[in-house]
Image 1: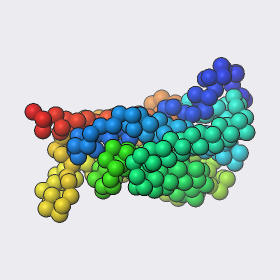
Image 2 (image 1 turned 30 degrees about the vertical axis):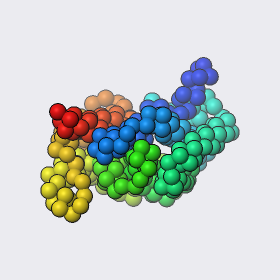
Image 3 (image 1 turned 135 degrees about the horizontal axis):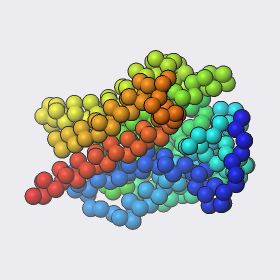
Image 4 (image 1 turned 135 degrees about the vertical axis):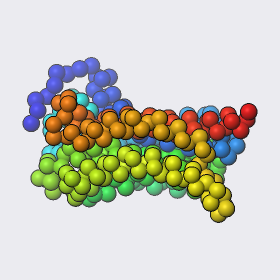
Amino acid sequence: MSKPEPQPALLRKWITAGRPWSWPASTMPVLFGTSVAVFIYGAPLKPFRFVLAFLAMVILHTAANMLSDVFDFKRGLDRDVTPVSGAVVRGWLSTGAVTRASILLFAVGSAIGIGLAVVTGWTLFYVGLVGVAVGAGYTLLKYRALGDLAVFLDFGILGGLGSFVVQTGTFSWIPVLWTVPMSMLVIGILHANNWRDIVTDSERRVKTMASIFGDRGSLIYYGFLLFGSMAIVLFVFMIGPRLIGRGLLPMPWTFAVVLLALPRALQLWGRALRRRAPRQPLDFIILDGATAQYNLLFGILCTAAVWLQALLAWV
């Protein structure tokens, strides 16, 4: 067990507890879904609603992070400090304080969501209800190999769909389908974490996809998430004419810009391959954080593709 680190300022403790480095995983789908609504569907931008949706996602994600840290610490899964550890394992904040903060944040985030649903409609209420339920129960789902599905829904699909509904007031499968690649990379972040922790998770009878697959299977799974997300984007816009014939809107060809992320994806793949003999000591240990950075890059490129398509159409 690691010794508690020196006590920093109170603000830094709570910032660490919230793990802000992970926020892009949930907020990029909000920006993307809003962009699809405005630039692809032509919905008028509602800036205040966008800000509220973005804020609600950050608050709810932070609440889920804190609750997960508490459960992991109590179960003995999180005792060694890493560069991306939260405040509980560092000995900076008590489990009781972080639990209370998590409950408060879930309440605030839910209140914002309910307020948006009142002015938007029942569709957003149902989307938000599922999202909050999955977020609050994430830790229990994670222990039963359902964590991947939980983050796929909460920090990908539902974020993109919810932000789309906030702007349009209607449901569409397009933001759901178009957000799948980013959602796969969010799974990649969690999987990199669980892959690193296979031994400790197995010792404490915690089942994750990584512990089920084992080391070799986890490598294959990580590669599927890393490169499959890009392959899906390229495949969908290449078969665009067939989708149009079936009444579906294809991804514009501008999504080819995601290829700009390929060099970074190859770097991450190299880290995964060299997990037993890394070039730098922390390369595999912080692979989850590096994957989160890649997810941000990928999400920015997907959003830029939507904006670029709108610009070309305007010109």
